[in-house]
Length: 88
Image 1: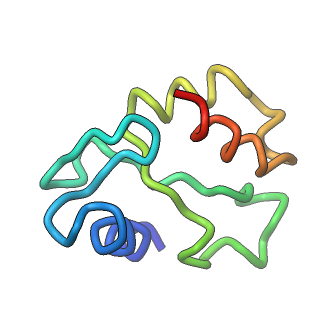
Image 2: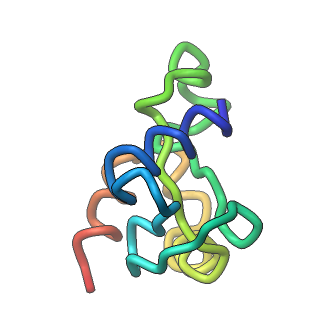
């Protein structure tokens, strides 16, 4: 699942050359500092676990900031990720 999320990100957002954080738009050639994040929680939405569309790519800094801000509330409210990505 993780690999397919990164491939989709590179094709759609990174013009086939880069992996891109969907929050801060940081571009990287490798996935070393990037995380594949589930939009819908792994536990609460088991049917969506392996759907490629259920993932987004965040750099470690944005990923940690998301979890620090929304904590466990994000597990049952996938729309919080959309809210987080829209705010700059």
